[in-house]
Image (cartoon, rainbow, N blue to C red; front, top):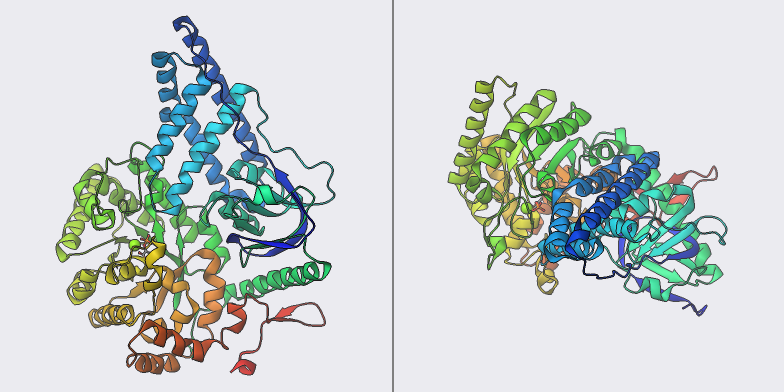
Length: 607
Ligand code: PEP
Ligand code: MG
């Protein structure tokens, strides 16, 4: 209900930008499902109804996929995944089985199947995998609506003028894609996370979005005036005219800021005094490769291949993987693509493996440990990677190495994979074979590991978790998980030094690479290859171009004398707050010139 009184709702900033407009609240509540027992002779008819509904849902999704707007076409891969799910025997065969054995109607059987599949995704800490639960829901719901003759698409707003802010409990990728750019100013959803597909799609379309705004659909009514701040994750309902004007101005500034940053995409990534830094992108979907190029990335520093293994009962075949890797490698050529072998287990769940229930999954059968148990699957992946190397510049890395033996055994599998390809007469190319340094034992053994690795990539997300003994998904200990903790800086210093002594590159691909105040320290510590999410590349490049390498070296010297994370953060903030002021404020301190172009503050005025 709306009262006309200004109120603020908080959620997760999922796609940046600021929009002001009228709300259009969409009711996507689930349809009520009838439960009906059927006679044995009716089973065939129910099964036929199910197949017809699946076919109709497939046809509909294909049509949406064809109409998808060009800006989001890279993300049609999400709809492809939903189409695949419709073809997956898991969904239909199980439903048919329930119809035939329990003698219930197709709707009820389908609902039970969907719940079963969702159960598999339950209790998984990782946001990405939790989101896959909703994929099953979206696809199941679409088929259900077909079975019941309920409407499947969002009705277009008829009585509102101009584009609207779409407010929904949850939006499926198909819903998001079906809405043309011109009709929607912003998205607001009750549920979701920054890795939900609504968020990914919204970012691809450059539409501001705030997700996870509990109760948005209850507190906002169609026609309410809204300010959606996708930078801060705040919704203002019924803003005053003055508030709305300020927000519109911030929206314009933000867009100008993003454009001005992206204008640096062809500039070299280097410090102010000319030290080259290699800035690459982390991707999870092949469709992100062109986005990485568009944002000026020097390559892919981490492709999390485990995302190929979700939502399926069998691991992807060697050929399927080869095609996927090849498309990324060809898109990025001649830039380097770093393919990481699957990192499954821990909080990363896959139905493609029979994983044991573990008391301590983060310390359990994860990543290289699982790969060395499932050696056939591991080698199929390595073969696909070696084949893809014929099409560009590939390097391969293994996650979660905690002993030198694991590295040696992984390399032995690589050799076997090469022999297998040679025997089969399949073309392949050798690749630099490196490791992720993300366990304390790998830090202690870095000098030895460096002699047997082609490169290092420091995974700070896990290195922080394991070094400070803080679960990366546990909000109760999040205050301990600080990248500028002296313990973490010492670990990075040791790894970087071992890499330098052995003459191998040392990269860093954890979230720390995207933290502005970590950058001067990383540069000073000799970590000159960084990898961040594609959309962060322009901002990080802009920051790196303002850092002086000599100053960074002396900052590292000063920090060495400090004892706590707070002290380090305080010192770096003191030195760089002004240098990064506009980046920290997402462009709010930039100015428009008389000709209407937007300029970032001049560095010399800031220092
Ligand atoms: C890391 O641990 O820092 C990393 C990049 O890997 P992931 O986040 O996929 O575990
Ligand atoms: Mg990791």
